[in-house]
Image 1: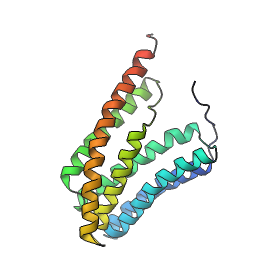
Image 2: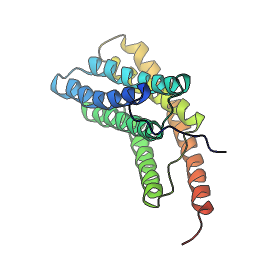
Image 3: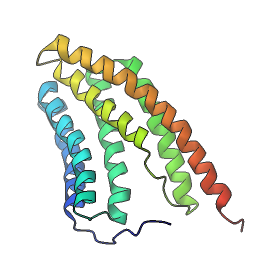
Length: 190
């Protein structure tokens, strides 16, 4: 039985997701205009933390909504893409982590677009995907912070969380392909 989702727009979790989206240009401005990867790392860490906060609040306050279910992964993807591409351009992130992340995000964007174009809905986020996102959200700011604060500590954290996060991201990507296939097969042919 599918859970009923609210059609409300102005919920606390949705406002947090909108603020996360607004944080992305601020992050890019600090990184490129102010040339400050340490402060940009703090901003992207806050954006990543609020990813967890909005979901927890949605459940706790019973404010899960259709908009939130769609907005949350979009905000995640945009923040990760901005941080990864910005980090690659600035030289903050190692390319051995950047390339698999960009390829994975591109694949997921195409898969999501195919489902939307075919009007088949969206994929439900898997728990392992949330774990992978948390690891990547830990890794990316750690590399940024390593330019300004405790370089050895943050760089080690970045490599550890990033390596594990990428492995889990690719694992869950395969699972999402299976989910998408089930959705497509379940649809009646026209």
